Length: 375
Ligand code: CA
Image (cartoon, rainbow, N blue to C red; front, side):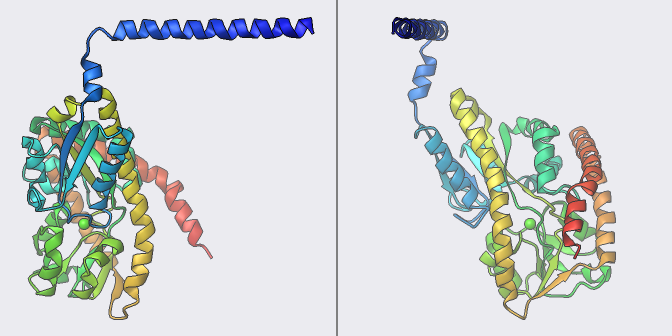
């Protein structure tokens, strides 16, 4: 009995001493860090931000991603960072997102880096490179291969911080009102296709342009264009592109894993307390993965739905057409690398990563997918 009581007393003393020690440590920490009132004031402040996008408000996948970011940021910050999302045209037109965030009209933007090739051609490396990297590889290059740091350097002169904000996975080659049986069929084809893929098609004789998503259906239906790429089954169905063209070609050679971008006005970001900066960065990372998960799940169901209409013809691009597209793509990307010193450095990083990951994925992802298809 006596022994037990002594043990109990000893335990109480040990726990009590530990608590006293912890309390005194915590007091010391407060004393050390509490020299100014700034963190306390910043911690109480509520930030109201605007986020402009290149997508119709709440558009599946693309438009939902910034809404999720806003919800998560608000909840994680206990309401201290509130982000209001604007669809394309609500505050600024779809293709003026970059400028709007750069000049501070909005604190954030959600768009695609290839839309800004007129400002910084090398930005295209951070959205999609024809025959480049798929989603998994793109995320790996950006977050563990030095890609994001290079991207930040490119956007710094514009007062912007870029973050990956979603990925479409491999897209579809697009909807065509004309059959593509040989490379000759590309000549004179009027097609909506942005970025480097557009440049490749132009060199092969197509007449390309980049229309904002919201204008594609009408352009295709009225015959202003003969073909368009958009994203994949889930998003294409949302725009009803299956009602405007009947040949649905794959694969999306031009956009094998397109990264959407979240841009943050640097001054606004720097003015946030550290914890809100972390919340925003982590929320972006979550949104980036979340979009890919959603597309992967919903594209399957959407493709099935699209194919219920027997008029739709799902077709692979002919092998010789893909070979020619790849040859011209390699040339276009090489020329892009010669645009300026930044482009050269980015190309080197991107290309080395691509070449290494191709070697590894031959014996991992690709070998597995091949093995899975074996009867
Ligand atoms: Ca696309």
